[in-house]
Image (cartoon, rainbow, N blue to C red; front, side, top):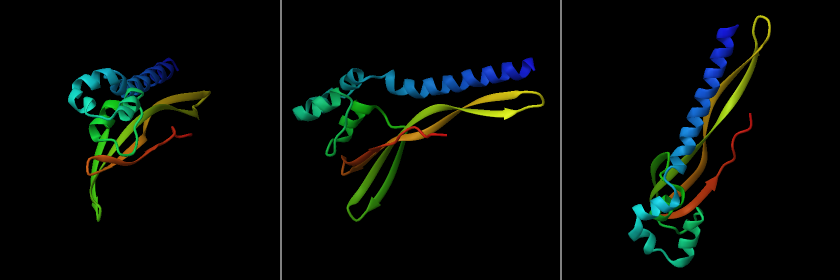
Length: 140
């Protein structure tokens, strides 16, 4: 029984660590750092887009560099094409820990497993935002 509790605790904290690492990717390099990294692109933005970027927001018509500064690097990049031209889709992943309960021989056991999901999608056509969506954390 001690092994089961210890195993559950280790699994919980491992899952928590994965979630923190996923979240850390977005927070370790904040907007100010990314602005310095792509200063020329930031300075070339019109004032209304600079305000949006500074607030971590994106808008249709924004260039890729502005989205990078506002939201950071995507978790995944997809390429596609249609009659309108080449499209690039950036996916941003989020994470959470899912609790699973089950009965063992004598008592209730808990497992905590890290899960990821797509929390946002940005579609670019010709280097500018054509559309974007955000998704809620899944309910289990």
